[in-house]
Length: 246
Image (cartoon, rainbow, N blue to C red; front, side):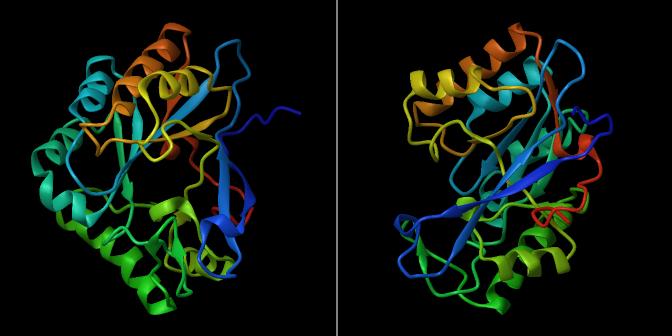
């Protein structure tokens, strides 16, 4: 049955032991936007700005082609990319600016490593990561964020509950486009171009020297040529009652 109202549809994926250095059960939220009731498909592009610099190839392509996207920004990235941030702020019709944390550490309340990155490790540290990222965005002039995506996009059930209590929805995804910006241009482009109706795509906009950025641009232009309708997470408004976002 096709949903008629603008809701985000979440689910959970359990993460295996290869993702963490301890036995903590981590969850990787999956997220879709509402599918189209027309022949054209709806896709949400989301980009993480973790640290480092700005991939101007991607930013320019989004602006030049008037393609909206949701950008998840860390306080660390903000400190080094003031000009790019102001460019994003200058296009509120295109860019939804959301919270990617203060220090880009996994929002996991247990002392584990996720893909080699030490997690926040405690409830207080998760709170600091979430609130610090939001405060940095607001201080820089962005609207108060409503979504949070932690580094590695993995959490415990208790850290998700805490994030909700802090007033944020947890942003999962359904299509990993660039493998943390480590995939080649051809693979990344093919993944994005293959997006299906309702997909939430994750890619990175902070690695200008990586080949993946070239593939991101090629893929999103192919989607545009197919007549895809691009939406931001805020465009789907209410998140419903599932635990990922509520």
